[in-house]
Image 1 (tube, rainbow, N blue to C red):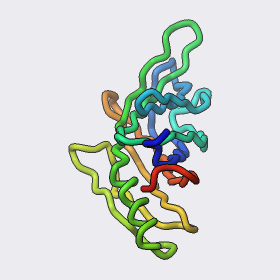
Image 2 (image 1 turned 45 degrees about the vertical axis):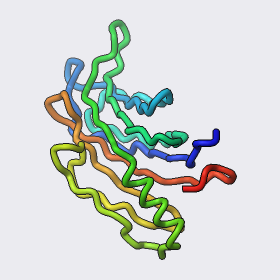
Image 3 (image 1 turned 90 degrees about the horizontal axis):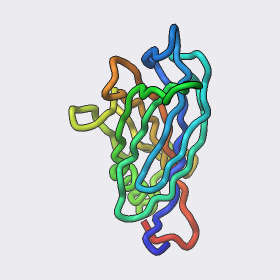
Length: 166
């Protein structure tokens, strides 16, 4: 893969106040899509505030595509119910990883801040930082196309030896 930039580890931490899709609760899981890549978390039974702590890893290549996250309620006898979706533009995160590589930024430094607005799904300000030699970002995303819900995740950049230089 000559256009490969590196890997993006996404830790899907938890859901917050997710929509109820079954009788009194939901059985949520998250599907993460970027281009042709598709990953998913495990199902957490009967919980609208699930804790997944699942690590999913995407291969990042040019052109850099947005990440789509869709939350579903697992159903046994019918099609799984959609519980909302969010989109995450990772270009600012990739740019921060490029900056870190070029400038050798010290540990604990905030490289960039993302402010919530109408064009993104952020529910609160998010900092991209250098932590233990890695570029990381903690993110709270507001789910769209649903009455309520957020998901919390953590991004971490992983360099691959021999990949295209950031």
